[in-house]
Length: 132
Image (cartoon, rainbow, N blue to C red; front, side, top):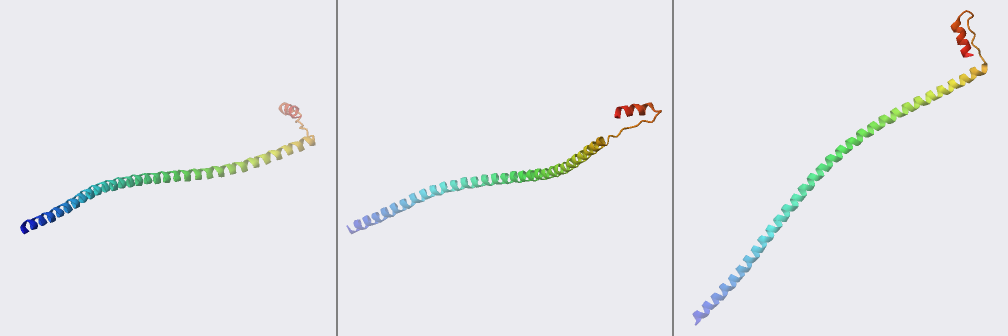
């Protein structure tokens, strides 16, 4: 009987150990699945980071290109502005000269000058008639 009791105790111990090992094995399998899931998630996130890095790089290149175009346009605008300023100055000068010429013409008209032709030159006589 004692032998039977010892065998039953051994069976209980072995059964308990089997259940414990089975539980640990089940946990390991679940943990392995969880690791696989986490590895896939990490891989997906790494791909997302890589994709975002590429997009950021492209955006930086576009920004650089846009900045260069803006700099070129700004430089051209400065040149056009300088040309406009110079032409505006020239226009003001021409306007002043035109006004001075008008004043001189008014003064000449007030003086009541007459052109006198040389007596014997027909062309000169016609010009005097035209001018006076």
